[in-house]
Image (tube, rainbow over the protein chains, first blue to last red):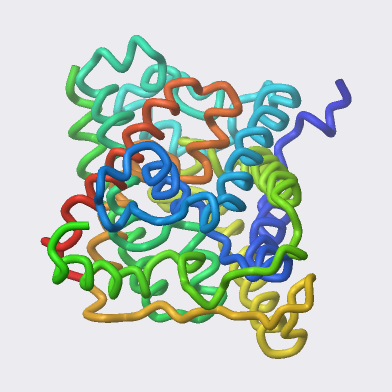
Length: 189
Length: 169
């Protein structure tokens, strides 16, 4: 396999490409780029249960976006499995040291293997990171009405005040999670 | 549908919610089919993965302010998105199918939902190292436990739908 297909891309290649998706989806069909609404569409498809927030025509409103998210999975298969970068992610030495202090030593792969295996799900810390973290992502993005793509890229690109507030919230929560919650959780067995 | 009052509240809230749910945006059948979005999503998934934006370690590096990678991504993605969207809205004004570009504004309200919801999401982002896009890209790249994180995120969204009329917006 030629090395160029396996190598990770620098920020100055990935960043502008990510930014292009907001105008691209707007141009393709007046769609606002945002991934988290798919969680809502999936809930609407599976268990609307008479909840007004989930009772709408999800095929019509969200069909395009569900196709987009199916594409994201396919893209992950291509770039993360077929053309997988065999080298560990080259994060800063200080990050490695900080994570080692929290008991995270295996930096191969895209996520810490100690935390994201199926057997880890049976531990308290693994369960909180995967199940608890996932729940917070789903609840928080629904409450805020968008995620990193919907608010962070699309909303900011449209110069929306709500999206700047949401972005400040993302940072506040992220810092709280990194410096308070994660060290607490990783200390649990 | 339950009590009429509750329904009206939810309709109001829907107005300032996900953009594609607004009524003015019904599109005509000449708009591109689903396959184009599948293709766009595939390219997006490749960019997220190859750009390492789905790496738990990169997210930690970012929140610890120890590396430039993720900041470089946002610092180049944002101007690209801003310039592209503003040009499209002000200069070109038409979609591929020739419709007028419509971007319904988000309603500020008290702003609480954005601050509080954003913070709750940020906490989850730090734990899982993934926002919604990366959750799906990681699943594709073989981190199968992300299926559980996605199911849990769906439960989070469902729970929000269930309790939203008790929450400040």
